[in-house]
Amino acid sequence: MASSRKSKSDNISRRAQHVLRTQVPAGDHLTIALSGGVDSVVLLDLLVPLASQMQLPLSAVHVNHGISPNADKWSEFCRNLCQFRNIPLEIARVKVAQGPGISLEAAAREERYRIFRGLQTDYIVLAQHLDDQAETLLLQLLRGAGVKGLSAMPVVRTVRKEMGETVPVNSVPALEGRPRLLRPLLDVSRREIEDYARKHALRWITDESNDEISFGRNFLRHELFPLMEKRFPAYRTTFLRASRHMAEASALLDELAEVDSARCAVPGKLHVEDLRKLGFPRARNLLRYTLAQHAVVLPSTVKLEEILRQLVSSYSDTKLHVVFGNTEIRCFRGRVHIRKAQTIVEAIPEARWHLPWRGEEQLFISELGVTLRFTRSMGAGIGWQKINGQPVTIRLRQGGERLRPDCKRPRRSLKNLLREASLPPWQRQRLPLIFSGEQLVCVPGIGVDCDFQAADDEQGLVVEWRQDLFSP
Image (tube, rainbow, N blue to C red; front, side):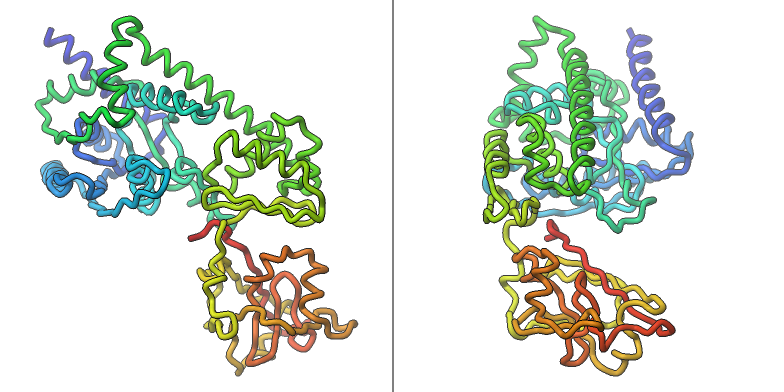
């Protein structure tokens, strides 16, 4: 019997080692997400010798959600455990704000993953296991999820993708995939983990909320699955196989959406006419994919279909405006625009707001939700000598501004220039204008005033802007 227990224990270690060897490059930094529960304590016990053997730097992070009255005791337990193991530990304290329609569990997860995203590490190692896979699949099925929601948790995934975020356009390619989530115990059952903990005489904490069957996951764990195991003992692996089929189907649907997106009139830019050319299920798939690319919390199936019907039945002059959650969809000249439902510009003192530019190469303006980039270039953009000596400020439109971007044509009203550029009305409200002293010098995306344009042999400053539509 002792030999059997040792064999199972070694088997878990071998499986974890196999994942590390196939997924983690030599020298990469591992950070274990340590809650103090039996799953993460066992994972720590497995990783300490494996990381040492494979020369992988190892640390830990504990997120104190402050929900349980015992939360501080759990933090202290994790601190003592890591000190004993000589493992560096970071303890992050968060405030969990439960919004309307969001469960406490989901809100806590959001805060936890926000902490993960900011860690300077290569991999955040999670202790999720085979039973977690089964619970997640059934919960998602009961919620009426589609193939993406029913997909298996992957062994490796970026934190951004786990949170449904897109990678910023100007991100550094070498860093955009960091940190990643690593789940080396996905084919290990809860029973195997608990047997390992008892065999190695490990100590762990127990979250009192784990016994509350008012939570859906706990109800499945304590009430439904024990009954199911009597009749279907292999349900865990069967569920895993089904969720992997769903993951494959989801990937194929995304590939189809990528093809449809590339075939749009303007590749990657969604127009109403592009949706009309597709059958309803395929158009719905493209719309869902496009929303996901914008890191939007997807609406319900009913709401998504309603939005699609409104889009395909709209005309070029229709002022379509659909709001769901913190997202809004608008149409302008047939182009579909996805953005935050409430723009912060409304809170800005319209007449007096301005922001000084102090030579930054990149400037995120939180009040406007935009990023400005300033690049020096010979013979292009704003002539450096022409603005030297005058304070450069960023302001908003007040009305009546005039600009002469084409030296062969007369000065024109900014209002007409923006109309010709097909800039949607709601974007014009928060368009940053560059002033030198009291003179309008540049309107990003429109041009530089003739009087301030850099000569061919003059150092110039090129100004570009990008809307961070889903920035806080």
